[in-house]
Length: 351
Image (cartoon, rainbow, N blue to C red):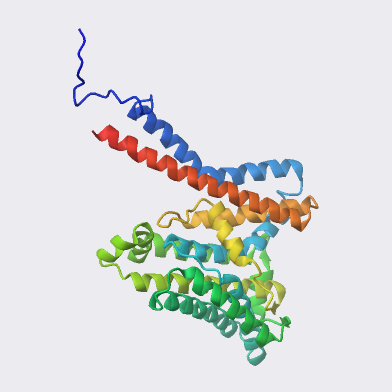
């Protein structure tokens, strides 16, 4: 017996829908999304495995320690950049901020041989530049943080060059040299600083209401305003935090080189943004975690270290990093598309 009508509750789908049913489509999309979300970490593992076969010294403890030491600054500053990107923002000033902080630290060392005082100067200087970014963006009613952070990129670099007379200023207290240069066995001390900063930011973003505000603001700024979230205060605070991580990065880099220099941090803003995107975060805001920044920073460090071991020139290294960024952005576009389809199929299943 046939019928020309279809009951309203039937699972029969129109011709333009996928041939698979909602349940099958949901399962397939769930697997695809899981693979995309875990993709950067899986790629990092596979990359390390392949490189260990090609370059025997790659997975030695000494070289692993070198990779961690070389990526410590990018990892710390990228975590601050990640918080900014969660709010749909960007901080282009982190490299110049780091350079200025290191120069101010070197000048402070000439006045007082105190590790605590010099660290306070560098971290405080970084946070101050971040505060300028946040306050100018929020209360200056600028259309996008790109504008003010691009301006402070130039201002901070100019100040660093002026204060240092365009040259590196040698000398750092022993405590800072220990942080940036020493290791405990094969593990660099700077890796412990990365872990401490990461733990502190995890507590802020995952276990405090401030973190919920950051994600809510990035997910839907207008809804965040309507629900009473202190949007201005949150925005200012994320730029202060980004500047603070730049100051911490300055401490590590100054300790590693035993100097402050206006040339520190060149292209660091691009490295940190690349680390966040390569790690799997999204420029759309409201989505991501600090693991993305860490995975991305490690991937950049591993690629550069491997290319150095293979005697590949710096110019080709830039090309490789650029290609990896393009692939990461395309993966984000694909993930957004699959998530939209997942929501459609989920809605169909509920009907």
